[in-house]
Amino acid sequence: MVQLPTPLSSPAAGTAAKGYDHAAVQYASDEELLAVGVPFLTAGIAAGEPTAVSLAPERAELLREALPPGSGTHFLPTDDLYARPAVAIRSYRELLAGFVDAGATGIRVFGEIPRAAIDTSWDWWARYEAAVNHAYGQFPLRSVCAYDTRTTPRHVLDDVARTHPFVAVPGGEYRPNDGYVDPLAFLAVPRPTAPHPIQRAEPLVVLTDPQPREARQAVLAANRTGLPAAEIDDLVLAVSEIADNALRHGRPPVTLRIWAGPGCMVVTVHDTGDGPGDPFAGLLPADREVGGRGLWITHQICGEVTLHRDDTGFTARLTAGNPGR
Image 1 (cartoon, helix red, strand yellow):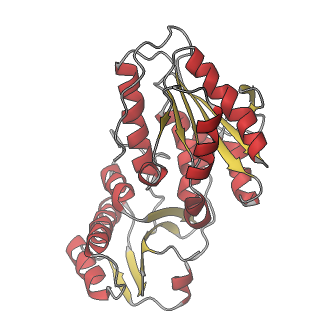
Image 2 (cartoon, rainbow, N blue to C red; image 1 turned 90 degrees about the horizontal axis):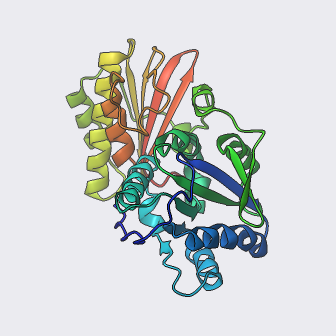
Image 3 (cartoon, one colour; image 1 turned 180 degrees about the vertical axis):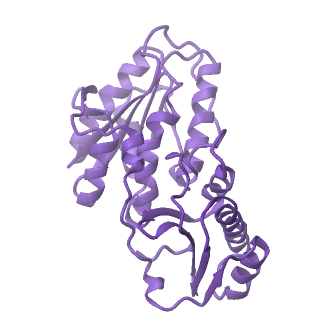
């Protein structure tokens, strides 16, 4: 969990519209990054707004050096903050609530999703970028998500263009993004999921309609990963929750498959139903969605979760260890 910083003491009244203004910048040099980030943050500092930066250390240092001395900007640890999308949402909501409780009427955040997450598990981070338009809507927040076009794959940049209602431009201003897709529409579209490399082999275990206890025992029995016990314990709990959800709320048959090898275990749970009706399932706490609690728990503790619908039904894939991509 991110340690919540103490918000600035005297934010200026009326410095931001109520609601979340979510922007992206696609940059190709440090100079382009600074041309957007510095004026964006200094405008917030001048208005008395809490400001925060969540970037890789080398880029965070660029901004730190460019901002006015004693700016009060909070530099957040990316490794903790972006451990998993659901964890990031929970942590940011706590951070933002702390600022608001201290009197903030405007908040600014300049950040990035770590490159390792983009490279290995973009699917659920794409869901994150769509979902936060809803998840942070209660806060007076302006944020800029930075993506380096020199290193970010094209399909990721395409998703970025569809999940941010604004584009940040040099000078720190926003302009509307014509390519933006409403989060409900974006999340409702089935996303192709590439098989994990370990899935090229035959699964070690195939079970039909397993009870949660059977599912837990199967994961433990198949473990040949060498992963820390705590990571396997998290996977066991996640598989148990998803298997229970599928039996209770899916459509039979429910099929559980397990692949395992050094440093990695993958478990899929498939049923022939449509999956959860809530497009935010797993990323946000489920107040009304039947079966949503299990997905929420799974997204909090599992190394990677992908959800996929096709004409055969609904599949949840849970990964512990090295994603391998």
